[in-house]
Every structure is written in C-alpha cells, then in structure tokens.
Amino acid sequence: MDVLDSKVVRKHKVGYEIREELWGNPPNKPIKIRTTYTPSRDWIGDLKTAHYLCVKRGIAPEKSSPKHCVCSIGFCEKEQKWYGWSHRAICGFGLNDMIFEERFGNDKTPFIKHGKKPIMDFSDAKLAAKRFASSVS
Image (cartoon, one colour):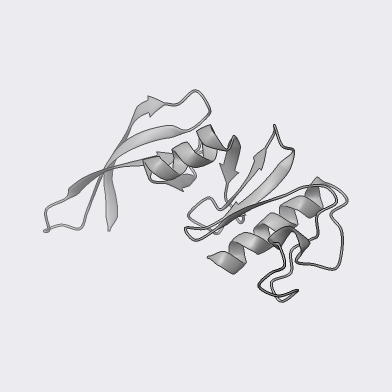
C-alpha cells in the first residue's frame, strides 16, 4: 500500500505526532488510518503503542538502523536506560546490566542478565537495546 495523503492532526507534548493518512493502491478504495511518528518522521506505530512508549514509559523512540521503517529502540531520560522492543516484548538496559546476547542463559535468566559483558556506558546500553529488539522482532 502507498501513503496517498498524510497530515498532522496533533502534536503531543511529549514529542510525537499523530497523523491521519490515506493509504491505498488505485483502483482500490483508499482507507483512512491514524498513526504516529517522531518529529523526525520516523514511524512509531499505532496510537496505543506511542502513548505507552512515550507517555507511560517516557521513552524517546528512534529507529535502530536508518534502513528500518519502524522505531524499535529509544532512550528514557528519567531512568537513564536504553529500551528495545517489538510487538512481543520490551526491556530497558542501563549501566551495570549486561550487553544482551540472545543465546545466553536460559528461560529463567532475566534479559538484563543475558550476556557476558557488563554495560559500561550508554553506547553499550544502546547496543544491548538494539540486540534485544532484533531478537524479539
């Protein structure tokens, strides 16, 4: 489907936009949806997801790679953690947690302990969030 039209209907104070979009492929009848984006026009997802991430959790979403089409990581200033997520799970990584490795531990091992190396700085935490998001997507 192609986005035929898109307009901002609300800018939320925590930093995301709600857009009303017209999606379709002519000659089929287009459909109207409401969806959310970051101020830099990266897609967050539906309204419920954006509200949960940005308002309830205080996360500033971003794409984990410029090649991706949807945000799956973000930083929470209040907690000083990088988060990774998908539709299935979410986890925050901070200093002294472990750099996430999917094939580490077992089902009872908390995700923040899934790894051999401790997170020493925010670039390590961001890497852990990226790896987690990739593993649950």
